[in-house]
Image 1 (tube, one colour):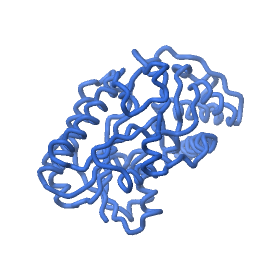
Image 2: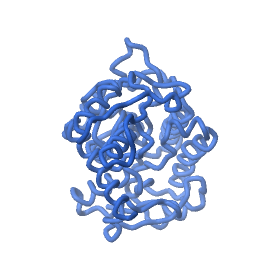
Image 3: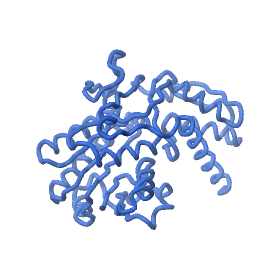
Amino acid sequence: MKILITGITGMVGSHLTEYVLSHQPHVEVHGMLRWRSPLNHISHLQDRIHLHYAELRDLHSLVALLRKVQPERIFHLAAQSFVTTSFDAPADTLHTNIIGTTNLLDAIRLTGIDTKIHVCSSSEVYGQVLEDEVPIKESNPFRPASPYAVSKVGEDMIAFQYFLSYGIKTYRTRMFTHTGPRRGDVFAESAYAKQIVEVETGLRANPIRIGNLNSIRTFADVRDAVRAYWMLLEKCEPGEVYNIGGNRTMTCGDMLEELKKMARCPIEHVVDPALLRPSDVTLQVPDTRKFHDATGWVPEISFEDTLRHLLDYQRDKAKKMVLAA
């Protein structure tokens, strides 16, 4: 079997690649990347995978890629995924995520390849839910609170439309907060971990700067997430959408306190108004029964281990920076 992973150089894409290479030895892994994509997350895997340059906003390049690879499964993970950035560059976010996904689906239609495609939507599509809507079901209304969330609504719906109109086997997920090693530094838990490590190593002084600590999140480990994505295309139904999420729910403040307990020195923090979003989503607790009933998937990695591994990842990065200086 041949699979294609868009966004293979990112946190999720690189972990999915590791999972497939470790657990599915019969699978040939192909990855799509842009000419300027950093390769540090997959450098240790490059001799075991096939990399191809293409651009989501260039339909011709996608058609050429699909004709060349003929993947039987596609994991579409590439996106502009930073919520804060979407407020600064809303049009670019919409174009990359909605038009880029449409181009990929249209490339499947034009080439006529028989493939399953996982389209990675987001829990952000639900926006600010009401208290009586928790836990959030797949049928909950969309109330997107950022340009990123709007782009994921569009991505979600265009995947559904291509299933209805053309019979393309799309599988949609709305993944709730997932983190771990390689998480981008712009996200809350990794930004906190990075600053904690900088205090530990003397690269900065207390206090660390943080955003909204009152938001409630349900956390999952990225390695559990990619295992879920593989099971999605093994056991679920095309045209359907599934919530996926962890089993540890807490405020961002509680998460910060857990990280501080694991720090190697006392950590102080202060709220930085610059880190507060124009509008925020403060209650994200998923109902994952539909996905569990279809696959039997449950999270396996503890929240404490996730945070330890995230801190260790940041410590390793800091060590490499010091050695390179």
